[in-house]
Amino acid sequence: MPELQRLRPDHAPALLAFERENRAYFAVSVTDRGDAYFAHFDARHDALLAEQAAGLCHFHVLVERGGEVVGRVNLVDVADGSAELGFRIAEKATGRGLATVAVRRILRLAATEYGLTSLRAGAARDNLASRAVLTRTGFTPTGESVLGGTGGTGGTGGRAGITYVRELARTSTGTGS
Image (cartoon, rainbow, N blue to C red; front, side):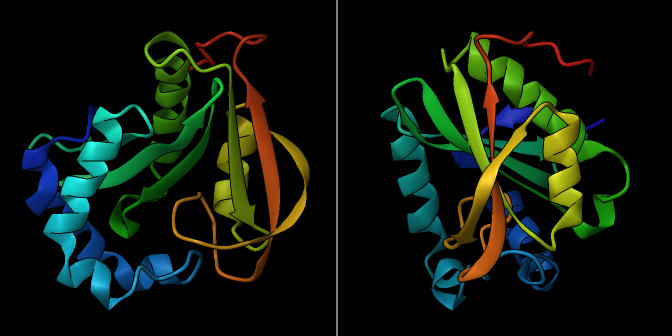
C-alpha cells in the first residue's frame, strides 16, 4: 500500500509526472488544470507549500516505494475547524481501494493532527467512484450544487454535483481502515 506523505518540495518531479500522465484521465471527471498549470508547475508547487505552511491547506501525496506518486489527497480552505476534501488517484492505480484507504487516513489526520471537526466534499453526479468513496468513508450527502474549480473531489466547471459533509467530532477517527 502506498504511503500517505505530507507534500514536500522534493515531491515536485514525481507530482508533475503524476499530473501529466493522468491529465486526460482526470479531465473526464474533473476540470482540466489547463496548460498554465503545467507551464508554471514549480511556482504553483511553491505556492501550495506556502499555503500549507500558513495552515490554510494540508496537501498530501500517495507515494509508492520507488517514489512514484499515485494519488493526491488534499484538505483545502481550512477555517473554523473545517476544510474541503479533494482526492485524485492515478488511472493505473484505480480499483485497488487506494482512494478509500487514503480518505480514511486523512480523516484521522484531520481530527488528530490538524484539529478539524468537519470536512466538506463535492463530487459530480456522474463521478460514481468518488461518490462511492465518500459514502464508504462516512460522508453524508447534503444537497446538490453546480461544481466548479479544480480543488474538490469531483469539482468540474458547471457540472451538476452532490455536496457532502463528514463530522469528525461525533465519529471515530478510525473508520475501519
